[in-house]
Image (cartoon, rainbow, N blue to C red; front, side, top):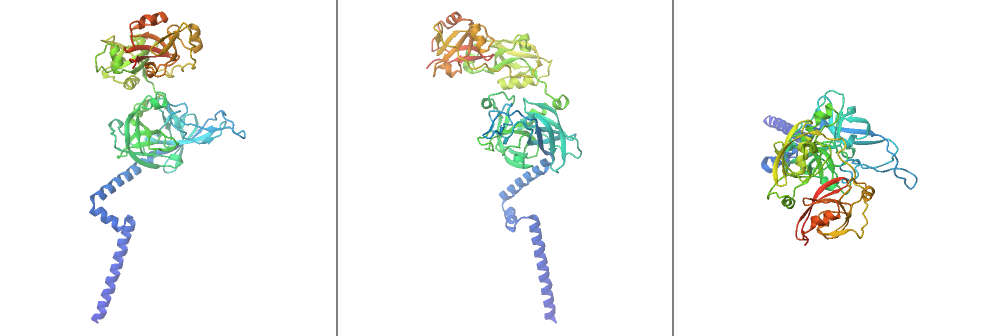
Length: 509
């Protein structure tokens, strides 16, 4: 009998053991962690740290994805511009065409036939419960129809309520409830090396998340794109690909710190160098985009350039002087009315020091139209203060295009000086080159390897001033250069394409 009871208890214990094993296995399966992984996480702090970081990324995805949208655009037909071998017309389009990135960035689209309406897509994110979506201007530029698709597959017709080509931003409005806006962060507090998380729809693959770091801040792209982009960019190695444009760049807390904008690529795909518009740049103009449909900016009407130490010496400025050099003053502009002149060095605008052209551009653009501002400057080595009333930046700030590249022919009556072949600028030459100057001496050739070539002088440049002396003709040139040897640095004021700048000829080696 006792043996029977023992047998029964053994069977019961066996059943309990099997049940316990099933429960434990179910737990492991539900947690999707093998026993070994659990043990490693329990016994190794570094594994626990990695798991914590992993959960942080998962949380960011859960928090951000409901606000990220897919933007599908039907654009206007384009005129045919290419005839293929079988009479087919089309081209490989550049979605940055007409933007500061037209030549800088590779093709983000594919081949299409022009003369037909075509589709494009990008990303964006909801930033307001009223249904406002932020994206890039180049995503919706020329759109006839805009469709916005959410994570839950709801689709809305979108309306572009405001756009700013200068910052490459646009706001799209949708009508719908139960929207989940993103939390906007503070891009001014970013540090190189912080986590960067990009979310968007690369190649049409919706809600794709990629991770990297902030590679650089304040990245200026003008030197590569060849056109002013009016802002600095966040650089990241978080993968950004075609279709990511307009989507958010997030920090580890899930806050939007930038708007994915573009890549530098030799293949059209991600090479680990992507750029995002700092969110603070967008926050500064969102109200205007929603209420006015555009951005109104302050304007002085001056062309400016960096003040190099060698150039500063030619103006009699002490070593270490910081400021921005005025190269040209637009006729009829607020700057001209206030008395600003070429050669002035702007050191403070309002109460803010201005040590770089980009810094001065930003502070002027952000000043309300009509405000009067005190400007501290140096003129001929003496500091003075003037007041200027800020005007409104014209719609087309690009100004006139450079004239066609026409080299004035050298004549026996011309002169050579410091590697430059120079001749008198006549009304006939000015008309042929399409420039406004009616007097001065024009560069017809530049000697290779000379300091003039190193300074960036080129045929078609018109010299209007040497040092502080006006140059209207070849006679003035002789007077202005008398006594100047090849070992002397010389400051020139030159114009090209309707724009003037200062150039420093360094001593010849």
